[in-house]
Structure formats: structure tokens, C-alpha cells
Length: 329
Ligand code: 13P
Ligand code: SF4
Image: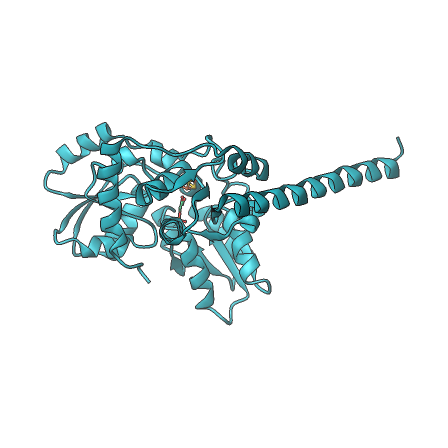
């Protein structure tokens, strides 16, 4: 086969992929109409999922949106703990997680048993649990938080002794924001954010010296301490709006966020903080869901989230307490 024939064959193959994608999007939209379903997607999802979604947002925004919709089915394109939270807050709706492999290493770093050990070490501390946790862990916590409201949640508590679980980096960052409280932190991390070091961020900054640095609070202290803004993924959209004169932003979070930022601000440049196009800031769980999974999920109404009543009740209490607290800003 000659070089040009090879090129033509590859082009033809990609043309088939485009047709397949267009057809899948058409069928997904049809299923949503016929079944009264809504698609919610996290900001880290692959571009084609973000683009077909009815709503894209951070953990808090998605939980709020799940409560607002009057759809019968919520197809939740994110990770398991997010779909579980949507179900807990909306027990009468069918919540589907299109791919059962969509877990979270941070959520896996804590169990009700390991939390019980930490409670013994910190008696009398109110337990603030990040939404990146299982319902069983939420059920034995006092209140939940997300990266968008953690400072307000901690300030809202009428006690000064607080144990933040499971993310150590988020906990350390909050302890700095609320120095008047005595904050202990659990020992879990998100490997996607924890892997980002100051040395790589500084290398990226040296290539873009005028860039504004925006980092997620799951990043290490050595990273957030040199960021101009530290916020949730949707908070990053608002942060960009605060710098109308800036043209370049370095983004310290999972690289799926770049798609959402580029869509909203097409004239600005967004550089993944690893300086390697985001290949070191890749969450395999967030990237596991594709259009075919979403299509089969809607068609077969799989995989439905269900919880035992007692866990659901306990987790709902911790989540509802959180929902009563406003976003940080
Ligand atoms: P956000 O709530 O900021 O979108 O973050 C979720 C998450 O999983 C971060 O790793
Ligand atoms: Fe979990 Fe980290 Fe992936 Fe977020 S980026 S879903 S915290 S593993």
C-alpha cells in the first residue's frame, strides 16, 4: 500500500468514527426525549460526553442540578460517589451510572472502620467528610463538603475541633483558610492531584511567565501556595472571569477541565499545569465513560444506583446539612 493510500484509508476510518459518533449522539438525544432522562456530566469527562450533557459542573453543582431536574432518569456521567449522592438526595428518581468502572481512589482510601479509628484518635471532633467518599462513610460523618463549599462548611460549625476526611491536601488548605479552628486531617489523597509537584508547575510557569495559576485544593500545599486562585472545577470558570485582561491560565487539575474552559473562553489559552499536555493529570475513572456506555445505559436503564435504607438515611443527613451551606464564593 502506498503512503497516500494509507492516508486515505486512515481518513476513511476516521470518517466512520465521526459517523458513529454523530449517530450515537442522535440516539442518545432520542432516548433522553423518549424516556424523560437528563444527562449530568462532571467537568473531567471526555469532551464528547461533556458536549452531549444537559448540564456540566463540579460535584456541588451536579448535586444541586440533580435536585432541580424533573426528569424521571438521571444519567450521571461522573464517578460512583457522585451518582450515589444524586440518588441519596433524589430517592424517587432513577440514577444511572453508565460505566461501573467509574470509581475514585480517594473515595477508596476511607472506610467506616478506618474512620472509626480516626474518631478514637480525635475524640470530640466534628467529622467533615469530603463528598469524594462512599455513602457508608458519609453515613457516619457529621456533615459533608465539596471543594466548592468546604471553607463555609467548616466556618458554619459551632465547634472549633474538626476532623476533615479523607483528603489530606484539601484538609491542610482549609486549615490555612480557617486558622481559628483546630483542624485535624485524615491521610488520604487523590493521586491525580497529589502527583503534581512544585518543580513541574514552576517549569510550566517559566514557559508562560504572565500566566495566572489556578489550582484545585486537592493539590499539595507546595502547589496551592503559589497559585493565584484555589477553587473547585466550576470555581475555575468564575476565577477566569476575575482576570479579564489575562490571556493565559495554567490549570492545576485533571485535564478534562481544559475542554470546559476552552469552550467558555475560546480566545484565552489554558495550559495543563504538568506542562505535558495534561498526560500526568489524567483520572482514569473519569475517562472510562464513552458515548457507547451512555447509549447502552439509557437504552437498558443500567447501571442503576441503589442503597440500603439505613446507609441512605445517614448519608442524606450529612449531605442535606451541607446543602444548607452556601458556596464559598
Ligand atoms: P470538583 O467538585 O471540584 O469538581 O472536584 C471533584 C473531583 O473529583 C476532584 O478530583
Ligand atoms: Fe477521584 Fe481524583 Fe479522579 Fe477526582 S480526580 S474522581 S478525586 S481519583
